[in-house]
Length: 247
Image 1 (cartoon, helix red, strand yellow):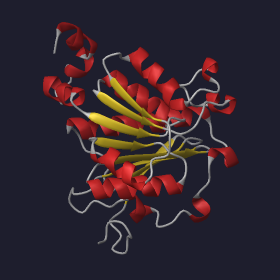
Image 2: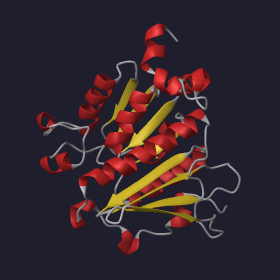
Image 3: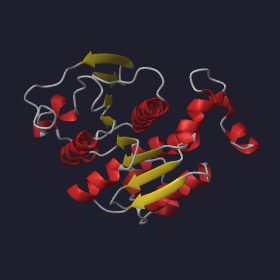
């Protein structure tokens, strides 16, 4: 690292759990972020600021006026732009050292598996079970850690799924099908800062995975009731009948 790089990340490098070794791991890492909405916004900004060397930004949508209440990576002047383009501009404004690759489409099975196989961690900020199930299956097939988050109304949750790490469950162990739980904020609403809180937790868990520090939320579901500002942790195990990881 040169002097400017050391200065940029100096407050992280001061942490004994990170030091030069952990920071270098970040600089050498690649993260894929699926969904650049309310959750993906803080994830992308914090991973870029923290020094993750390469970011893959995946989203097929364009910026709409109703997004701006919570999707803080996009600005009013971005209305009508592809979200990946708007997010790329903000990421590079925060940290021009980051290499950014964008995908402005839904990744189908073969391409999804190829992209996920080439990264070190996947962060899921999508808002529907079809996407979450597909990303989970590809992460399990590729053996890649998945940081999954969700937020709706005043409620949020985060967990980490880590194939090959002991008897780690996968996302389908927790949600065997979408069913009536497949609600979106378009239907039921969401308070703006909740997305920032949950997305920030996702970013932190992704950094811990990449730097191999601390204890990630593997086999644990972190739940937030923002109306009461109460956190709870629920432990869960692999489902022996899971259609993804039981085979």
